[in-house]
Image (cartoon, rainbow, N blue to C red; front, side, top):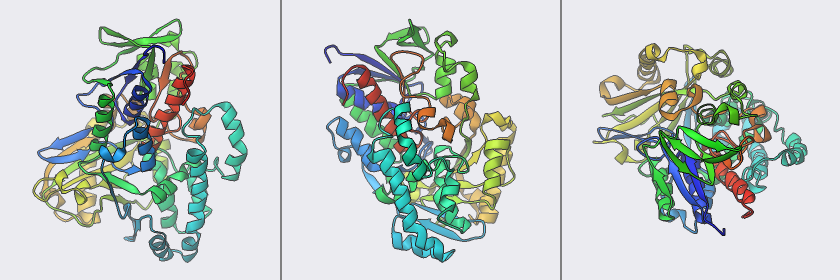
Length: 497
């Protein structure tokens, strides 16, 4: 570029850091403003007396998408980040005591599935081929790497119909499998991006293909080591990060973003990018008179993801029944999802995702202990649950289940440290509207062209990156938003890569 352009990014989550690297490598002068003491956004570290926890994302898929970020800066990922493959990816325990070790090996998966239904096992490869076609459309054909225009949407419709894209994920999976365990194994992934499997479009079923083709990985030291790798590269390129600096306003003049305010301090920029929660960006950072399409009413009418109740436990005792990633599934599937997304009530039963990084990385817990977190999907704050009153009784219910029903013997007696996170914490500490842990819900009417665009539709030189813009949530989706937003920015500045 003839003149160095100043860019400000609000928030240092994976989307903000990845875009910061891309723009800094392109010649922009980039400053990231982060409200917290450290970078990372949701991927924030927690250390209590030597027990180390990942507070946000806990696994890595699609390492080739990560490689692309380092290649954009002419670097090698391996010089910054060490990935450890996991096998199995998850162990999934069902309510009847059966389980399946979900992994990438075709023979092993078919053998396990055949115990439940032999015809399902025979259809496994056919399902993976279907998921591969979705992956090809979104990743290989670049639909997830560019802003999704209405022209691209109309062009994609014929292929979308052939691939059943409008069909909810659960029902697409049900076309291949009959046993409830096999159906769950390949439809639950949308929950990892805040989606309801009974209304999230089947395009997100590319996730099982991503896992099979690219593996599921861990980084020694926890997910924060991934944050540190991106941060290190960004700073090496000359980028700047201002922590403990919460942006309070995106300053707009003549329908153009001019910079940001942090308290009473103004910082000028040629472009502003928000990696903050979409609703927080619109409702709290931009004055109403500057928002035509995304007025308060429209923002509040959008559907937001569920939230999460998380119980962090540092245990002096190890529990081999738990793998690095473990799912413990309630008997109800559809009705429990309905309670969370529609009725927005705290049900008597629950499903649990357990993350036990000390299973792979002993350094995550002291003295041969166990570092564990148990995440339970719960309604967002639109459900009006009084979490100040409910959190401790609910934690007791979870502990009772884990110790006396699931079989983690003497769990309470082994606990050395613990911490509880509720939807209130997502709202307070991450500025997540309604405490929604994954931003906008990825339903059909909030996907692709229907999703908030990477380039602001109201304000010139304002852009979005992260979970609530195209293509979506999850680490691969979030990293792809950085590439799509970079494309929009460079196109606007007539330097398309």
